[in-house]
Figure 1 (cartoon, helix red, strand yellow):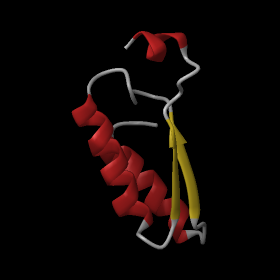
Figure 2 (spheres, rainbow, N blue to C red):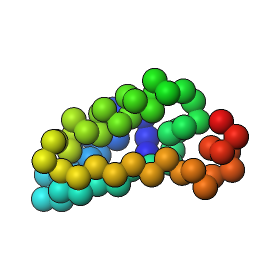
Figure 3 (cartoon, helix red, strand yellow):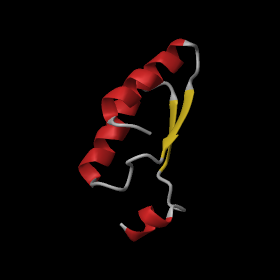
Length: 68
């Protein structure tokens, strides 16, 4: 998972290929602040559309993420 804008661009290009289910996770998610996490999920949802399935894996098994 990247910053919101590059992630949205990447997901939109995949969606254009016909995919309708997306799983995002890791990257900066859960490592900086809740505002960035919300921006990432919002950008992803807008990129894939309301009819697509969006799954978020925050990487809870990552030792760094568990300390936050």
